[in-house]
Image (cartoon, rainbow, N blue to C red; front, side):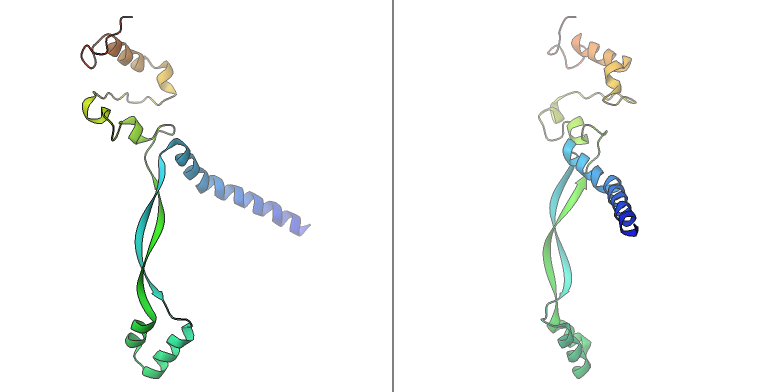
Amino acid sequence: MFAYYNWIGNGWSDGYDYLAGQSESEWCNLIGSGYTITQTISQYEFIGENFDDYINCVGNTGQPEVCESQYFQWVQRQVPVFIRDQSDGLVPRRSQIAENTAWSNNAEKYELPNNNHIEMLNSDQSRQELNRAFDGDRGGSSFFIPR
């Protein structure tokens, strides 16, 4: 029975690890607030065939610096790096502020503090701001829609 309980414990552990880390990254990818970029890193790596050759070189010459220059070098590698951008849990920050769009430089922006996307549906504050926009008080007269 020990193997059975070990199997169950490993399953719970895997589930916990998923919920603690990977699920957050997958949700960010789903809503567009997580993305991956490629970054170049440099690492000092052993390039010889056998590490014993390096050890023998140091033992025979007594000069680790000379042996190191023969068996190690800086290597550049491309590695993926996950970036998690800010969001309110539904919409990424870039979408909220219209980053890199025609709206980002030309439009008036109004923030509704203390309102998230769910609360906006029944918020008096969001209703007042939308009424002002429909009455022509926002964005000049180009957005006037009579109620």
